[in-house]
Image 1 (cartoon, rainbow, N blue to C red):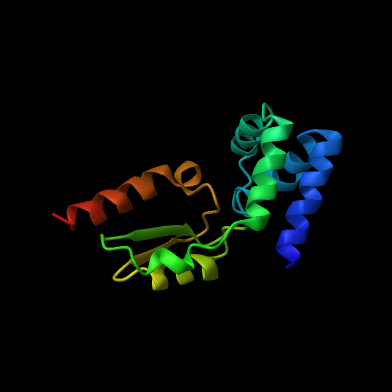
Image 2: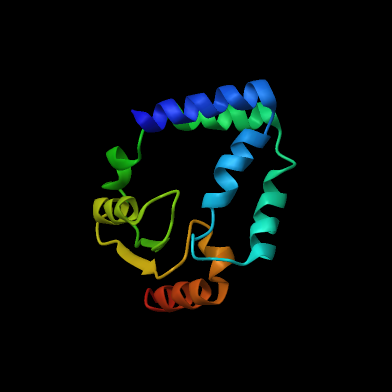
Length: 138
């Protein structure tokens, strides 16, 4: 697939050039495109910069060949909440919806305008969402 090829290409770039190509590719898409908080974006990039090139390369290669979770999601026997940002550029909302649909009795909640780093972008909203959901499990 194009995703597999892209991940393997990026792994090759990291092997040749170090972590920067992966950071340059991933850092800009971790937050919602409409999030213009430059300090938050700098924090995300700062978390990535100390990354080890061999570790990043290995992670990219692993993602390229991993099997999806769909085969076993239907076996989940506990309550599940799938919380996702509506503006997630890494795992699109359609993929989050498919995950929730594959888990028996899962609840999907989409947080409007949030990206891949939902706990960072919408901390209070996510905490309220989780607390409400957990309180409903009692």
